Amino acid sequence: MNSSVLKAADILRRGGLVAIPTETVYGLAADATCELAVRQIFAVKGRPSHHPLIVHLPDVASIRPWVAEFPPAAEKLAHAFWPGPLTLIFKKSDLASPVVTGEQNTVGIRVPRHALTLELLREVKTGLAAPSANRFGGVSPTTAQHVQKDLGALIPYILDGGPCLVGVESTIVDVSREVPAILRPGGVPQEDIERVLGHSVSLEKKPTSVRASGMLESHYAPKAGVLLVEENQVASVTQKCLHEGKKVAAWVEMSTALPSLVTRFDLPKNPLERARELYATLRLIDATGVDVIVTTLPKETGLDAAVRDRLQRAAAPRQDQ
Ligand code: TXA
Ligand code: MG
Image (cartoon, rainbow, N blue to C red; front, side, top):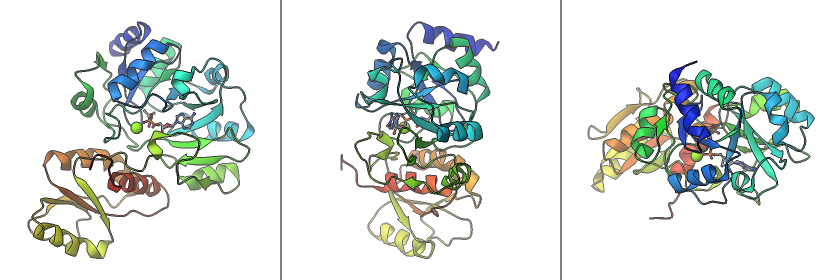
């Protein structure tokens, strides 16, 4: 057994918090059966207490005690995508505490695809409640160093599992209702979910009675403002920002022409890489202290749909401005 996993398990068993690696983003984990531990997550993140958390488990067999029913659509999706970047919303059992579920009658469950965290889950033999390990509303962490910077002073241990391979959060599918719906686009593309279910699935755009913090309009936001433009507007929009006296960075493909005063960050051509690099790039750009980040709006298909969603939320009007 890996000694870092043993250390993490020990802290979790005592009701402490540990940042854990997953294939999507790093999570801030607590024993989901210990309400005191779970409450600390909300305090450390600065997250409103009614926002539900995802419970992470090592395999499908360990999910049964957490859910009231396991519908056929869930069976299909679990079989196809777990371990992986998919969260399923089930009708909850009594084991899922209201502190974890935001007092809803449903619970979000995920089997992450990361060797260290799977080892940890098997060692602690409990579910781990874990939101992304960043301050509420900010950019999610995809390396242990990101977590260290945001929350290092507030948590006892970060289990370093290297950079996250997917880079955007899990796709959330609500299977607690008669017709499953996607609540958040993510690491499993909508097209793949539809192929497995054998029918089209709607993507819920607006927050409904279901409270999902990733569904707030402004979220995943860097300090700099974000402007989403068409490829052919990049040059004119960045020029205009410079005229207004702003410091500007652009996340654009190598071939895109830019005024010389704009700092360039390369936007990969491959959707997998765009997703993987999204949050690290937003953080890197923020560290340069620019006022504005200009980038192009990705397509609505495949993994780009998740990148598009996160950029739209990063660009949305902010409450504090
Ligand atoms: O990839 C991920 O999902 C990452 C890693 C750490 O697993 N986790 C993550 O957690 O993104 P968080 O808390 O930042 O976002 C989870 C989303 C929130 O929008 C939350 O409201 C929603 O899942 N959620 C959790 N339980 C829910 C429920 N019972 N009903 C509706 N939405 C739920
Ligand atoms: Mg989050």
